[in-house]
Amino acid sequence: MPDGHKPGEESLGQTLESYDAGLINRRTFLKRLGLLGVGLAVANAVSLSPLGAVKAFAAIGGPEERAWALAKEEAAKATKKTLTLLIPTGSIGNMTPYVDKWKNELGITLEFIEEPDEVVHTKGMQEAVAKTGRYDVMMPTAMSYPDWLDSGLIYDLTDWVDKYQPDLFHPEWGVVFPASHHAQLYNGRVVGLLCDGDQITLLARRDFLENPDKAKAFADQYGYPLDIPKTWKEYYNLAKFAHDPKNNFYGSLEYRSRYYCKWMFMQRLASKGSLWFDENLNPTFNSPKGLEVLEDMLAVNEFLHPDAYSFTWSSNYNAYGRGEGLLNIVWPSGFKYSMAPSTGPATTGKIKATVMPADTLADGTNLYAGMFCWGYGFAISKYSANPLLSYAYAQWMTSPTISADAIPYLGGYSDPYRVNHMLEPTERLVSTYTKEYLGTLYNNIVNTVPDFCLPGGFEYQDALDKEIHACLTGDKKPKEALDDAARVFERITRRQGKDKVRSAWFALTENLAEPIKKATGRANWKL
Image 1 (cartoon, rainbow, N blue to C red):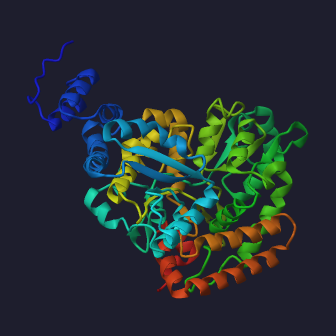
Image 2: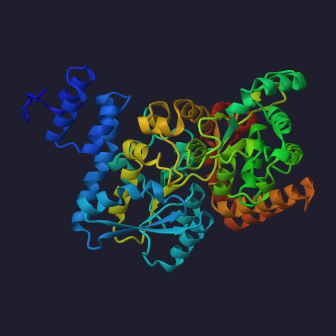
Image 3: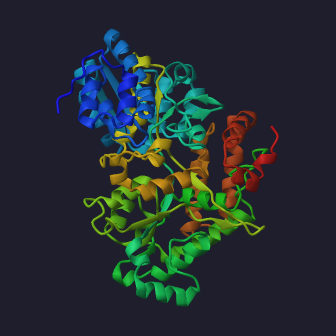
């Protein structure tokens, strides 16, 4: 039916309200938005958003449109027509779909320099000394921000955030708390824009859990129904029950490899009600709770995939997708890969997920404490020739709509991190992750604890990882490994400056879910 609307006859607000009220169809709505100057990508997203047109445009047309307006302004006066991005290997697929738009509409070429994820931090520290201006936008983990900011490498983004309003903390489409603070702030200042919701969740094979013969055998053996585990004890039981190495099917694919095993330890330690330091910055893991964690991890080693000691994230995802085990502890991208036929041929449509298991505290309550670990974001180099254009790119890519479009691409590993990604997802997000899993991500992320997002963070995490790995491979006894890690931590703290690190630790741990604050004693700390 032809649209009798005449340009200027109805305002943007009236058009949005008419669509929400069902007075115009989608085709007419898109046509009118086009006449009103709204881009097709924004119009499409608004028309399909479960938020409704008025609310969706406020979310989408806000951060994204403000960023695009800034990008146009800065691109027009830029003498250097290239933005160079330092990114971790494997992440590029979430960014390449937008290269043509930046080139065709702004005249800006996006150049990507890929480095292994463990090398990105080092490259940044080298640039802090060399000051070459080689990078404009840098994509580190949140652990890099303290050292990068203190070294003068990156901008404090707080003033730009206040001015251009990326809506980082909006209750309906902002970054979910506490990741909003752990993964973007350093000492209360915004230093990066999160683009990757790296929390870990637990996956299981739905077809195994729903097998009636296995369900009966499990219930007969353990006295409770076969299902995804709610506690670490249930996790152990299920891994043991499912372990069938003769048929290339293993109880769990949990990491034991260097660089990854610390997170497996930290995850379990947090669920026992312990953080990494106390209020005086003394290490807390060389304790009875830490020893319990290592003993639990050693006990489950018997039921792990044989490649657990060499897994990278990609080899882990591939092995699970081939159907080589029941349980897996992964980032959300692992679920995405397991659900895609090309990367999860044996697991597509067969995955059931849950929040990370709880541990039972002394008072009998279960503490659920997830781990937000890694979590890439965009930082802006102080040596960039186009710092505001670089910031505009970061805000645009992480805006509620562009991020919702970018995340589902299989060629990258960015994961959901905004409230709308999980609670009001687009059709593409649902088709990639499922509504059920997106709900699991939200329920898990609200109880996450942070990585070592502190001065010297990479030194701390490497020291812990080295010793945990030594224990899990049999090179050291649990107490020896934890005591050795604690001694290295104390040396790092002295070198970094105890007062500086302690202040950052207080700021970081101020933002935790209340049950975790209570269980860890953080609620009673005094600076």
